[in-house]
Length: 312
Image (cartoon, rainbow, N blue to C red; front, side, top):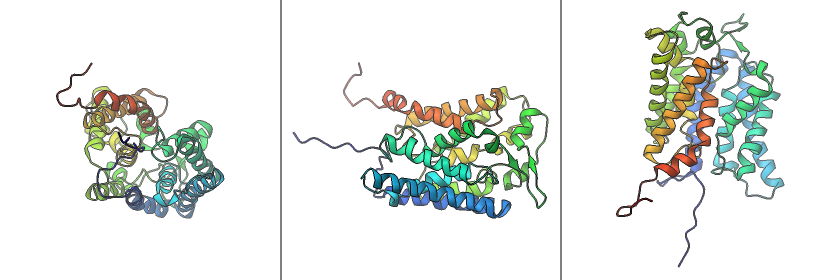
């Protein structure tokens, strides 16, 4: 009997290449990358460029050194570097996200077998590594304007004072302190819409995830049932960015319909838990990578039974 060869994820059931999907993700992130670069200047721009370039070059050098097939043309390394860069503060020293790119590609991705074999999102794994290693630099944010100084993000303000009322319009447009790519929700939603139209992602998981965080915040948030508080939590931090660009990663999210629901709900509950009861105002990155870890279990437990066959 001829044996079938089972390849690693992502398992794409359409006539489209992984490189095309990854390139679409890069295109979708361009609006928020451009906005962040315009708002914070050349330093932010070079953070994005150098971090992305470092990821691609690290993959190239590693694969050449290990005599492996070179896969930089699949754009996955570029996606990893770009997501990591957009999750960094605009004035961070260049070498820190470059170190993060090296960690993401070698430790989180290549040592586990490359694209499809990594058990967590490489960019988020690297961001958490940087948050632990360089906490001060990774949590120092610059305000907006020509005379901008280091200031707290709206989420940090809400954490300290739940009755505070951040400007929701500025939060939607992006005129707030934060990481390079998370601040402009309108740019993120434009990118998300592009991915949905191109059928790169489905809106199901992002909407369930955001809805779970919203419900958790409504039930347990210190701001009560205030619409302003709820919207501030949704528009603040990396929730929108994480929902559409990280949660939906093909490799580290479930493949079964029920599993995708469970995964999104779990990530949403963890995000709400970390935000409201954790030491930091943010929790998206940790919530998603912890959910990534249990994806094999979710897939295993939610595989539909074959027709006519009873489960044990």
